[in-house]
Amino acid sequence: MNIAETVKGARYLAHENRTVLLTAVGVVGTVSTAVLTGRASFKAGRIIEVAEHERAEESFGKEIELDTRERIDLVWALYIPPVGVGVLTIAAIILANRLDAQKAAGLAAAYGISERSFTEYRQKVQERMGEGKEQALRDELAQERVNRDPISNKQVIITGKGEVLCKDNISGRYFMSSVEAIKKAENTINYEIVHHMYASLSQFYEEIGLAPTRHSDEIGWNTNNLLEVVFSATMSDDERPCMVLDYTVGPTQDYTKLY
Image (cartoon, rainbow, N blue to C red):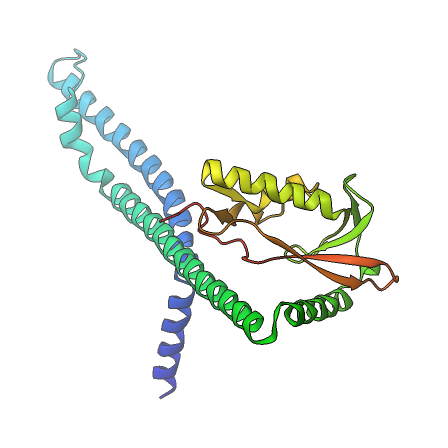
């Protein structure tokens, strides 16, 4: 029973970490291929050298080099191990990349489903409660987020685009700006989307004076859903009015794939 459980656990760990294991196989295989190729080449050189020496003795000291076909016939078997390891290495790398692509596609699909569900939920809340109550609820949620992430623990970014304290709901960054500057950036991004089919979150950040984040190039908007910034009024822990930026439709991972 213990052996069966151990085998089952090992299979589960191998399945969950198959991409890491395949990548490790690719790394080890690359090094092994180089080492085996070097050893095979050294042995092949020695074998060819001995064969040419024997032929010279048979020709009474006259040096006669082996032609390409003769050399291949003598040493081809030596290269079977490095070629085999090389083929396995390439297969492991390709399979690891394919698994990564499948995993990324799955995450993107799950994110898209979650985003659509949230959008439908927000629309239904607006229908049932009315736009004013929905805004009040959004302000309350935004205030709770600000309370959980107080400005006293953050650095405020000076963008030179306004004197109003703002907080981006995606990156969690506090910065100084204005409604006019943010709306202008929104119009610029939507112009980009209409004329070039899509725009990334990084482009929006650049327009409002923020640096791109680690993942902001990977998400954005397209002509199916334009950028629409919504504001929530909150108070920071140092008693300053703070506008929290949210988005009617959040940026998605597959924003460059329109159809």
